[in-house]
Length: 284
Image 1 (cartoon, rainbow, N blue to C red):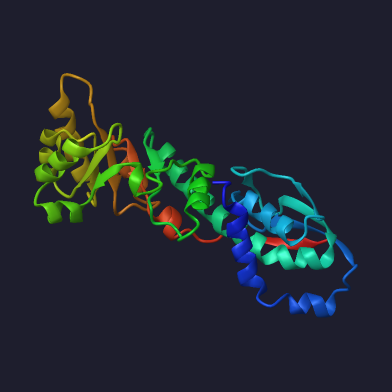
Image 2 (image 1 turned 90 degrees about the vertical axis):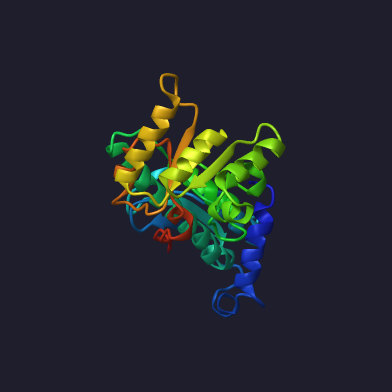
């Protein structure tokens, strides 16, 4: 993830600066020194610290930055994330980009932590997974933010695993045909997972030898039925299949979904709908 971080932050700075920070140039003496702190306005789980540090470094390597928290820390309102000192103009120029990364990524981490807590309260050992529904260009940072919030990463890219979705099944003809094609040609050790929309497709997937199934858009009642079929298929031996649930997942439903016995609950909202965390820069 670190590879390319400065390039990414550099593009964000170039986007923000345009032809230059004209307001700062016209109002702040070029030799004026200053000290400021980035502060959490509301409770949050921190993420994006490396991007914020890169913003200050790229604007002015002479700035002195002291970190007071780490990615993954749960911060209360008023907690200081970092302090920065040096040329006032440099601090002001880097401010918005640093805050944008921290706000976006801490928002992802904070929402993930809420889902993780809801699953834990349900008594389930299921893990919360992200998806590929990420902001273009920010996938590595957003998936790191999910980890900072206590979640786990699904595929990073299309080459990381085989996930046969409903459109793949429609394109090739059936669950059985899709699995047969994947199993005949899959490079080892890629796991073969298949999405199923109903119990009939689930039974096909079990007979076809899938490594994992994604139970899509099923209610908790349907998930209980699906888990009974899966456990019955492997009885009396151990269940040799990973089970993921997805679709219709929110903070109100995730506990009930996890309690059905699935191994994973994937939540696209972690990265496509997380509200930005509230942080600001306070001048000393």
